[in-house]
Length: 133
Image 1 (cartoon, one colour):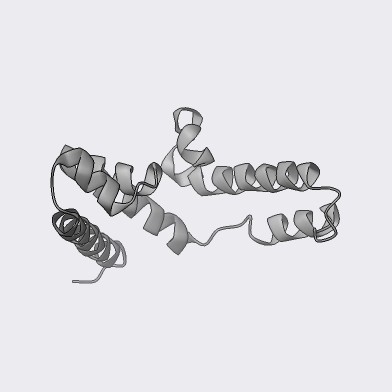
Image 2 (cartoon, helix red, strand yellow):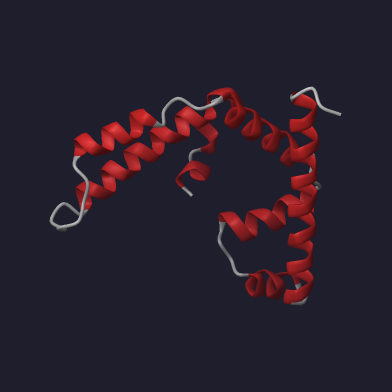
């Protein structure tokens, strides 16, 4: 949710994942500081090592992220709004259905179709990027 809230200052797609990892790193440090007295926490040294070990992202991860962003831009506004309500605001299918005046089953089916469409788009884009069919 923090990344969504900071989307206005997010860098371009190719630089997004390293930026997102850095934001997550600082969120972990903030959480750790707030829960310092807890007996179960990681040292700053370990957190730094974990962050450093995953800071270099493979080109395939970057390609998948860029493909997903492009696929998302091609979705109709209604589909984008449905995904936003479900995954950004974390509303239940029942809550979304009540707000839209639809049944939960109809909303669930719509979400299934949108996710399927995104998956197909991703697979097509990634195959094309790999020089496949």
